[in-house]
Structure formats: C-alpha cells, structure tokens
Length: 301
Length: 161
Ligand SMILES: Nc1ncnc2c1ncn2[C@@H]1O[C@H](COP(=O)(O)OP(=O)(O)O)[C@@H](O)[C@H]1O
Ligand SMILES: [Mg+2]
Ligand SMILES: [Zn+2]
Image (cartoon, rainbow over all chains, first blue to last red; front, side, top):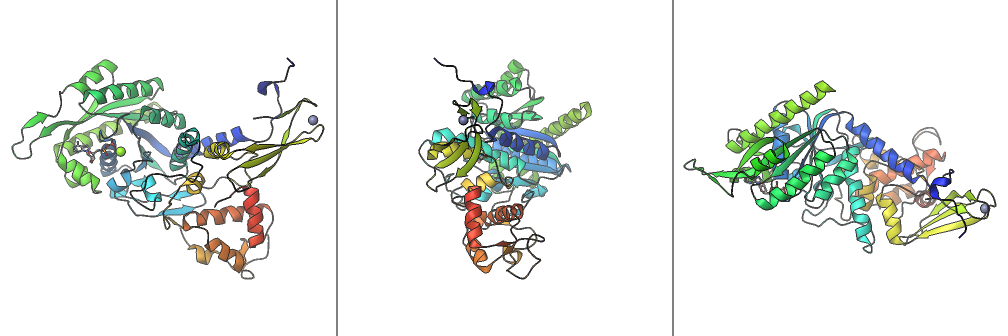
C-alpha cells in the first residue's frame, strides 16, 4: 500500500477554517460570560421535578435580595421559564452587538425559546432536511443554547441561572459550553426513580470539577393548609441519603405546596406573592446559600 | 478537513463555495502546485451538519450576527419578536440620493432593494439587512440594489433567508 500523508502530517491548512470559526464562537461566549459574577445551573436529569419552578423562584429571590439576575431557559423543547418569570409575548431588542433580553418579575432578564416561537404550543421545528435528523439535531440545539448564552446582552450580572432540560446528556452538553461553571444545583424529589437519575447527574458535575454543588429536595412533604399537619408524599429520607452518600450538602427542602405551582406557572413566583409560605422560605434560604457560596468563591479568586 | 493533491503532495486551498439552493453544497479546492481543481459536493444532511455548528466551509465573509443560527434555522419564528432598538426598520433604510455619497456613510438602499427587503420575513429581516450592509461595506458598495442582493446572497450562502 502506498503511503499517503495523514491529516497531522500535512502542516498546511486547507483554508476551510472550520476549527478557527468554532474557537471564535467559544471566545465570544467566554467574553460574554466574563461580565457575570456567578453562573448557576439548575439541573436534575429528570423532568417534572420542579427545576423550572425552582429556577424562577430562585431568580426572583436573588433579585429581591438586591442582586442583578439573568435566567436562561436551556429547555428548548419544553420552555417554561418565560411564562414563570412573566416575559411571555415580550420583544427582544435587536442590536449589532447582541439581543437585548426582556425583563420579567423583579427585573430578571430572561431568554427562552418561548419568546422566539409564534405558536406557544408548537413543537420545536428546524428548517432543515428531515433525513439524518439524528446527526445534526443535537449539534444545532447546542449551538442555539450557545447563542442564548453568548448573543444576549446580559450586561453586568451578579447571577446567571440556567434551567437545564431533563436528560443527563444535556448536563454534559452544558458543561462542554461552560467548562468553568460556578455552581450546580441538583433538584431531586423523594421518589426512588428520581434519586437514581440525580445520583448519575451528581457524578457528572463532580467529575467535571464544578466547584460548588448543592442538592435541592423538592416536593418533600405536604403541609395541610387547614390544620398544618405535615405528611410525606413518598418514603422520605431519599435526599438525605443521597447527600450522605455523595458528600454533597442538602441546601433546601421545599415542601409540596399547590400555591407554589399555581402562582409560579402564572408568572408570579411564590417567593414574591407569599414570602412567608414554607416553600417560599425554603427557597429564600436557598438563595442565601447560593449568594454566600458566590461570595466565598469571589473571595478565593 | 484537508485535501491533499497526491500528484504534488501538497494540501489544496479552498477556492470557492456555492449553494445551489437544494440544500446541497459545492466547495471548490485548488492545488497550489499543479492548479488542478476539485469540488467537494455534500448532500443536504452533511451540509446541515456543518451549518449546525454555526460555521461555514471556507470561512466567513462577515462575522456571525447575534443569534444567526437560531434565526436562520427556526421554523415558525415569531414575526415581531425582534425590535430595532432606536429606529424602526422603515426609517432606517434610506432611499437613493437621500444620504451621504457611496463608501462613506451608511449603505444606501434603492427603492427596489427596500421593496425586496420588505418581503423577507420579519423574524430575520433586521439581521439580513445588517448582513447585507456589512457585505456592502466590505466590498465598497455604496448603493444596494436587488442585483447586488443576489450576489451577496450567493457569496454569503444565505439561501433561504
Ligand atoms: N414544591 C412544589 N409544590 C407544588 N408544585 C410544584 C412544586 N415544585 C414544582 N411544582 C410544579 O410542578 C410542575 C412541574 O414543575 P417544573 O418546574 O415545570 O418541572 P421541571 O422543570 O423539572 O420539568 C409545575 O407545574 C410546577 O409549578
Ligand atoms: Mg422545566
Ligand atoms: Zn497538484
């Protein structure tokens, strides 16, 4: 067989400049994030556990504490953060240096796929050949998330919260975009199935070297609004066990409260509407922990 | 990706990119030694895979616009979501003869070019206008006409925008 020189043996580049362009896009993202104090991902691996509700309430809680906050809905296929933070139907300002985000409750700046879609209930569709979708879809969606992070004029922010969609692969993709993510909050519920997925996600963020990781147990117990009696929805203790096994601290236990779901889903996070509700108090305390960890991080830098 | 001319044992240079409009792509490469040319033809899936990365084979003539990937790819984009910050688009597109001479100030759009631009979906219009504007500046074009829009479109590979 004759010897043909290999890619690495040929020094001269062909000038198609693909790698250069990819690196350029990464630099853009890094430059944009450099004016943001702390980037926090709210993830789980599992869907329906309250990631979006926690993100919306945490964003509002941090803003109530006087912090400047942005929130990115990374869930392109099932966006809900726009509605929860009250920016549905708002427009984006279109400048040469980026897109200006709308401001929702407490002045939180929000970017979500929901803002870009004409029909609220339309499934996410791309103008591209259907054939071979599996080859390009996840690349395209990662690229779009990169744009949500890099091409929005966030300005100076204390916190940028990212609502990560279900699927542990989505956590991996986010870590590829932001290798030096500051904090990861993993939302779990007391079900055994969730605990299993969350423990996988935990390992992912730990192996990626995310500096600060906290567990958030959601819908832990139900407090009867009439008599105040508390009861567990599932076998309790799952989150504590996960915390003990992984060495990751349990930062919040948020009780199940129908008011939290109802008001948050309608664009009024419960921490604003009823800051004294036990669920709100748990989230406000979570905000204090996130804030304290951010301060500690800034001090050691 | 590199192309090696086996005859000369030299890496070929990128020469030209064409988008025929059927979702496929033509990229021409030329050997700096023997000047032999070859064309790489990609099918729609391969073409999409590259553009999903947010990159263009052969490099970009004008830098990527903010949210270019999502605006260029999303099906069913909301018509009025993007608002130009200060001046609405209609006032921002000067008609021939009303602004500074060619090359100096902003690009002047002929009424025909304005009309053509107004038919671009609103979801991408502001961005498309900026891309044409940057292309014009780069080529020292002072007045934008439908013919130049066609040329820019092909050169920039903005098929379908
Ligand atoms: N602690 C809670 N008590 C009551 N309802 C909740 C609680 N947390 C979340 N919800 C509601 O449960 C539903 C699913 O939550 P969501 O945040 O959308 O989940 P995810 O983003 O993880 O898929 C939403 O309607 C939400 O408002
Ligand atoms: Mg969600
Ligand atoms: Zn040759």
